[in-house]
Image (cartoon, rainbow, N blue to C red):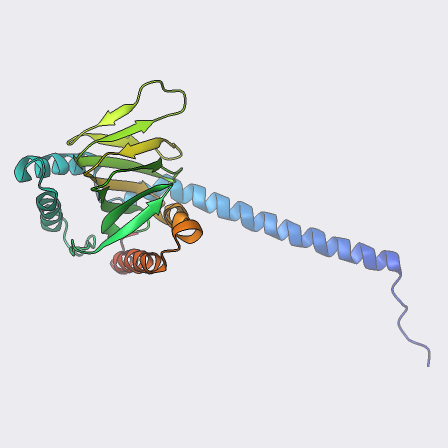
Length: 240
């Protein structure tokens, strides 16, 4: 029996396939443009979700140094956490008050340890440092970073600079987003580090050395759990 439908010519099949491909790419481009536009809009309003103030944190770091003495790092951390919990209600922001919850951090070739005081989508606040000293790349981030030196000394360097930047206790090293430097922390250097911007986009840099070099899976797991736990806790109270 002869078919009631005519066989589709090769050129018609090719034309149909081409149209389908064009539609697929057009859809992808539209989705990409919508994503970029949405992210651009969110970037203009992200400051409404900030709770911490860089100036206040700098003053708190200086106060902790003055109250605890120049070499009492543990006392400084205790003073900072106690002040933060007294200043910010748990309905506004969630803080991790377990100052014994330290994890290694390998990033940009540098190694130290950190205690995560706060982590949310738009802010993080940590204590970072090492008694041994370390050196590496700051990373190129989507957040502004404020590095308040508590103990020790940090040096930094920008390409083309012929003089190093020196940061001592009580000073703050400000690293604007999308800026990268080489830095060095000398023996016994610890700092209160505050970042504001899009924090999840900083995580690949924070995990890259662990995944590609140290293969310290227990540290990777613990860091992921603590970071995720704190971000979720803050999202549950509406802190983005």
